[in-house]
Length: 427
Image 1 (cartoon, rainbow, N blue to C red):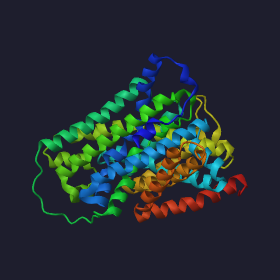
Image 2 (cartoon, rainbow, N blue to C red):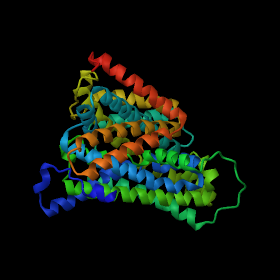
Image 3 (cartoon, rainbow, N blue to C red):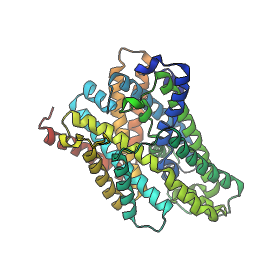
Image 4 (cartoon, helix red, strand yellow):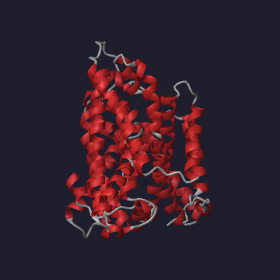
């Protein structure tokens, strides 16, 4: 699968630049994808994945890697054919029709709003453990206002935040393996350890691998890279994320055990406590909170990209496309921020994360289906990769918790109805 991603041919007008420019582009490409992937799913998502798969948690990582690689490949091809915001949505609309496109748009937007809320709750609960949920709502609104004012984390700043994330994870892994876990009786957590449990864990972990579309299908031309940069950037991002998730999951399983890990709301901090590293808890909690701020910005960028494409097709009110002096859609940002703030106020991070994963899996199932039609006259393996990605996304979505599937079903029904009312078109 990595070879498939490596051979994708999403090229851009920057093909003619020299080798020095290309090397600099690799350095700017990696944080785009990794900055989104190494987020709340890494810090919190391993616990609900352990609840699903138990001691077989690590088997879910290669499964989700294959699913993400297929989706990244499809996204790169869609971006090459449909430039501008919302390449995945645009491809679904062009290749599958209006109704599937509305399904895809609704699930993408709802999933990204839930992701904003989940990440904000993780920031608040780690950096300010005693803070009420309203603080997480305030965090979302402050980040959205900063993004609307034109804040973009790129270049050296992106690398600083990325290295902070890796340093925090490395510290926790080292502490977990340095201290032998205490003997503890079984805690009786309900866990699945069969195939359904593994696919359920992979569905939850899918949240921790999102962000690749910032590299494969950027909304703005200034973020677009040469095809060779995209392919190696995606490969490196998937490998790094897979290794980091695997090592952290192994360390947490070693220190906490499957049952205790499954019940943990803050697995990194609980592992530090179990390993007699409680004095590190405030520092690690603050570092986790800081590391997740660029992830919020990345999710908002992805939401903007899809929403602007939907608004361009008149399925969202035209007023949402109005731009501020910084060139950002301020009304769209405000609506997304208010919605995410409300979700953050009412929903804990794990259920919000599960709902976001389920919605985005449905979106990527449709995007892979559209890519399969797009690539019908291309090389056979590329078309089959899109088919595999579609099938895996459906399987993982169907393995999610019941509340996440029911919430996604509501979005799938309500989204096209609202789009039809706004556009006054039903086909």
